[in-house]
Image (cartoon, rainbow, N blue to C red; front, side, top):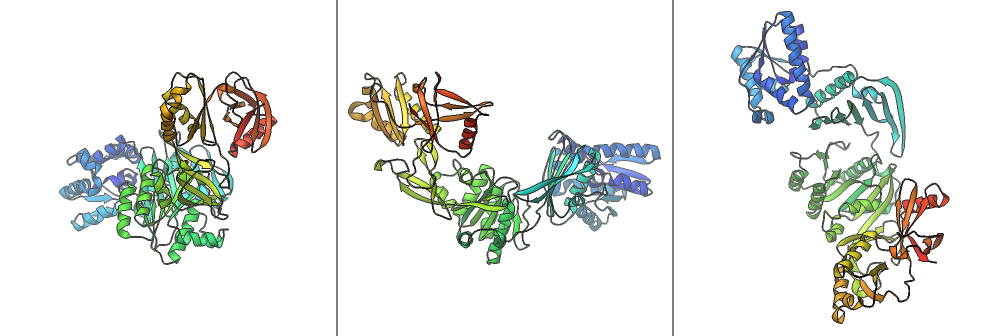
Length: 597
């Protein structure tokens, strides 16, 4: 009996096991198989490395057993190997078997069927199972994820988002055992319906094995062989989430939704519930995922990146014409552009983004999409934490004077961000000079807010560009700029008939006052910039107030009094009572200011 193996049975050892149990007179390995294995090994893929090892084992077995082993056939070009999925390499291998009247041994169903159709004798080998332990065996009913690392104890995470416990076992798996488990996963993904290899790169492979999303990593990408498998614990209907009927109505009518939350917060579970809700309403629902791990009804088609590009998937969806599309998850700039393109085309979109705060999900669009287009693309943001809806924002677009500004001629386009339940204004987003400002209003249209440090630097850069050598002090208060200058410099700053000031106001979008440095001291609050260091919090004000005694406040409450150093800073130890207070204020993003004493 003459046997001719193809690549699929060489790389995982199935062919060597087969010839040990079958009487073979001769083995002919096609040069196409050697070339394909060499190409995979050069790319650093595990199948190539294991394939080379199997060829050496095959040679050793042939020598020890007196089995005739030869190599035959033409060697395909690199381009042919790279595009082997077109069948060019398989055709060369079938040709070798046909030339010698040999039996083709393969683990590829398509290869086996084509060979049989051409009259070539075929031995089809079922997917290899190199270990009695499968990844599913490590899951119990409560496990959300299982984590395996060579030489380390196996552990799992159990519970639900927001209530997760780690369960460590005494089982320690070797690198060889992890390789066997990984090989079993990959082979089943290749040969089982509803299973996919989503990514296969040197050192990393991502597999969707039915409901299990599995990441396999190995050196040099990771320090050791590691397998992480995640699965949804259960599907939660939308009615089980604790929110008002008004929100449910909003979700039924909203067209551009963002679902935000930290990793593991329960975002995917929530969008699954939304998808099923839309499906129950008779809507056509599709998903865009990479990897495809959402657990949804069979009627909801799940798409991945077509040829690795979500933009191509979006083109297909425009032809399919869904009512709603779930985009899970959006990270790259191209993802946000595809989301916006589909939304503007009239497709209802539900996008999933990683964000620790609700407003951060909106800020992901800034700089990627034209600012004025954002409210047309996103109208509702739902923040998930601990598996529950924690906050909902809605967006509107208007032209107004931003909160804190007083002059009517400072009106500009503003994105208003409201909390859904009480309709209180939370944030305003608008342009400030050349910068985009996301201003926390804190629950009222008239709430007084101070400009960001970036805005302060923007003002300083504009003034310094006008008079680089002038001795001036620049202060920004309530979106109004006060320039304190020496008397001899004031005419240059003001300009003939006020033209210089007018140009500066036009560029900054703010009112500008020029006053004498010897004039009355500016009495309003000084912005304080807080920087966390290893042992201290450093509070800094404008260096004009270096060596001055100041009182520091937050929300109208005096925190402490102190004297700044020659740089205009003061240090507070982290471990002190005031350091603890500052830590809380910084975490809650509270505004801190100072006044001269």
